Length: 369
Image 1: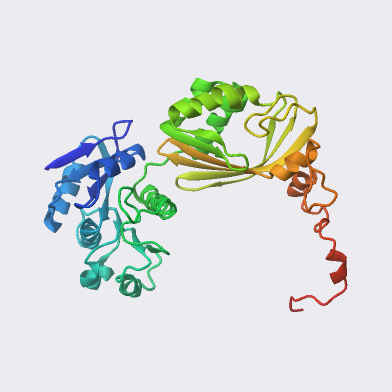
Image 2 (image 1 turned 90 degrees about the vertical axis):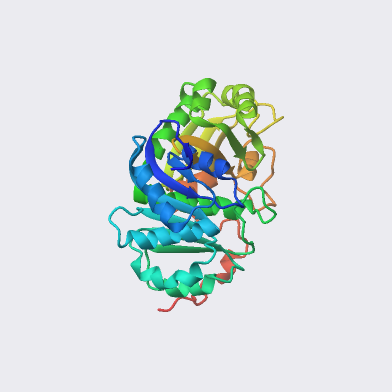
């Protein structure tokens, strides 16, 4: 089959036929999905409908492919991915799922919608004229995902294009990965990967081992104070000099909840510690106060394949400053360790910072009796 084959790091995985179209960088997209664990076949640019079936058959026959095969198409290639999904309903050797970005021309083939039996996700810009007809054709089909991205134009997913919109592109990619993971795999234990990463950070405090759990060019952003790093070299420097050796000796993570998705994990926890060292990553420039701190924290961790790609870490910096004595809560709507205690025990009083709360006592409730 003419075209290129891009393998994941482990050398094998589910197959993905990439129909990138002339306006997309096929190599960049193929590398991205290979990093996600797929064996990616990129047929030549002038592919036709019959060629998709040949590409699927060729990919299934390769030893690197673990069996199941999906199709990923953009623009005109999105139309061929859609047609392949329709063909899968009548052909035993068809694709197992399809992802379509801006399926140019599929409005002329919506009569094929009833044939589609494999999982399908389609992404459209808000101003795409095909959206209304596509939605109508698939009304009552809960297994078909149709996602519309407000305020963006066609090509919002193309990093090199004028219409590129990073938030929309990232959300669309996560939705695509969710479909692919469910339909064809591969399946990774994200909890185990994250637990291993945090063990190296806070347990063994091993910079090299921590970096090995991440992609070559990861990034970390501690949102309240914008500390972290972008790229392998900068992040390794951050971990080696400003994070791992700058964690208090008694730092503890108390888990509250965990949500695991297809390509990300969200941890809700209480971080507690004694401020016995200058904590560059949380309190840069603040000398140790010896105060004990408990603060609710949320970590949103994105994975690419079986490696961490990025971390967004949130906490209430005002609560930390109150607890170490740098912020006076007397005339401000802020609290100290009470925020962590109420997170753990919801029966603690609410609205204690709301001076007007007492005014509504005894008034009728808006809820029906």
